[in-house]
Image (cartoon, rainbow, N blue to C red; front, side, top):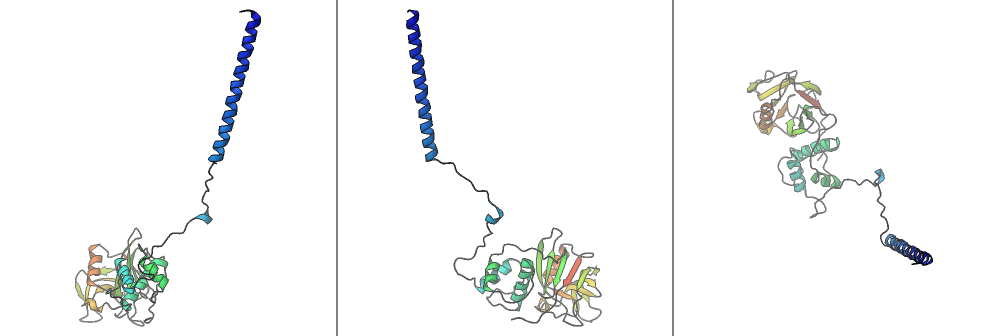
Length: 259
């Protein structure tokens, strides 16, 4: 092959290669543009405080408003002293309602629940100590309940009580400690023949104790200054080691029946 012919062949090969490169490049640009049009990039919004969702409350779907018996049943299931679950909002139900309000949003009142509160009650999953409650036994005179709070600030139990009658015989308000206790029946020094079951004394002869019968743990202040409790609840305190040195926090004011 002559030198001139070799030059012609080389130029032809270079021209052909250049054409192939141009065609391939054009094809890549074309298909890239089509891909961009068909599948545009997605923009993901980052949640802000204004976009945060509020917790949802589950309400019973079978009825727009829960029945009274359903409300009482839920209160009982939460461990609140509602008395008999019969659909009757009596004074014992008021006691449980008062405790629920205190342990839900810190406003212990014994008023009957509104429709909104009824729905809130049946949606309640757990109870937490109120801001003013301490580790120990918290006696709320307004509710006539005693809330037992553990060292981990967990509600261990809510007990029905009957505190001292308003006036001279009322239970002294304040933060006290168990000073001494008797692990058996004990006759009152101030009131002969008045028997106290396993009393725990916390202030000037005032004690937490069981009475001759659980029927004396009335849903209103009825004692001579002590805090009456059910025998089973007193036994529970003794069995758990609640005793000398543990706190007894008495607070609140009794307001006459609101039914």
